[in-house]
Amino acid sequence: MKKQTQAIHTQFQRPDAYSSLSMPVYHTAAYEFGDAVSMTDAFCGRTDDPDYSRVMNPTVTFFENKVRALTGATDVIALSSGMAAISNALLAVAEAGQKIVTSRHLFGNTYSLITGTLRRFGIEPVLCDLTDLHAVEQAVDDRTCALFLEIITNPQMEVADLRALSRITRSRGVPLMADTTLIPFTCFDARALGIDVEIVSTTKYLSGGATSIGGLVADYGTTPDFGRRMRTEMLFNFGAYMTPHVAYMQTIGLETLDARYRVQAASALRLAERLRELPAVRAVNYVGLPDNPYHDLARQQFGDTAGAMLTIELADRDACFRFIDRLQLVRRATNLFDNKSLAIHPASTIFGNFTEAQRRDMDIKEDLIRLSIGLEDPDDLFDDLKQAVSD
Ligand SMILES: *Cc1c(COP(=O)(O)O)cnc(C)c1O
Image 1 (tube, rainbow, N blue to C red):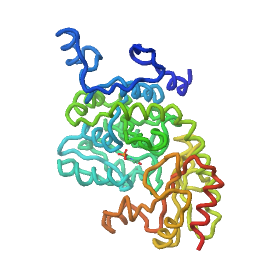
Image 2: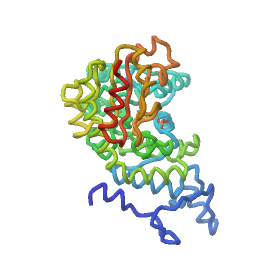
Image 3: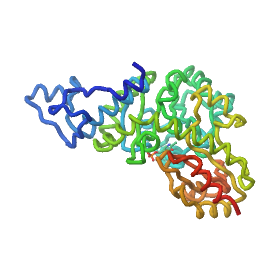
Image 4: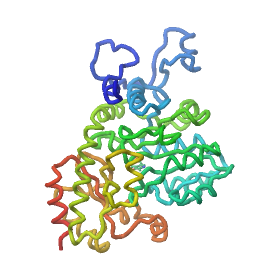
């Protein structure tokens, strides 16, 4: 069976008492045991009977198993948000005195986590140009606990060579940890690209219609003790496991993920081509455009689609604000890959509380609009974007 079929038809671990066709939502904190021996076996991990929903819940396990079928990961751990997935995964590999090698181009909260929060606990950020392999060779040393990156950076749209990075990190025994939120894992093979730990904000493509906040960590089994530490230490001690109701919604989203994504990515390409024809649009950044500097690499790594996020550059910040104010169909909102198309001016919102110097350092431009393309008819979307950019 193909992965997609497997993901749709993943079996419940145990038969449901009423033969429910959809996975029931097990809204319970705890589970009862018949005797002392089965209780100690569950608590000490000798059986996979759930004991407490902070660390295991049948509805969440079902969601995790579906993702495992699609990714081929050794284990998949569902968490309460993309940020919970990133912070828990990094804390599972890092110790005080060690370094995380990463890029200046990071999702805002990830940047703040690595350069602020984790630094307070003695974990040192090393910001490096990950498209410069020589610089990466220099940056990764025996104090490095992880190389962390986003597969397409948001909103700069930079793509690094994952196989080349993996050759460097594997030769030094350092895990390559990748936030793959910008391209669904149905489109590429993280293991073949050399990713050791894959992290996804499932709030985005996966949830389907922006129903809920969630995250996941896929462990490819190449980092000693990582998966075990996630389950037996991070879930227990930080308590950021996904809740059953969210897992239920995200399971439904997962079943239509690939179908929705293909439509959204096709619309994004069509719009990128048409937007660049408009005189008021100074640039369109989309790795699906053949003349984009990362087009070939993105194609080799992620296949023939390039995501449903694109950015446009207008004259200046005022032009961006006028554009946002004029939109009639596209919604003024953050988030990515809702069924509805969304627009935001990152510099004044997501990155609004960073200093100007920090924004410059992270290449967050004042004249840039980020668009997330939804499931509307692309002609209707183009009409709205066109009227919003014209003076
Ligand atoms: C949204 C996002 C996150 C954070 O995910 P949440 O689910 O909002 O916590 C992390 N990385 C990327 C690339 C994102 O787009």
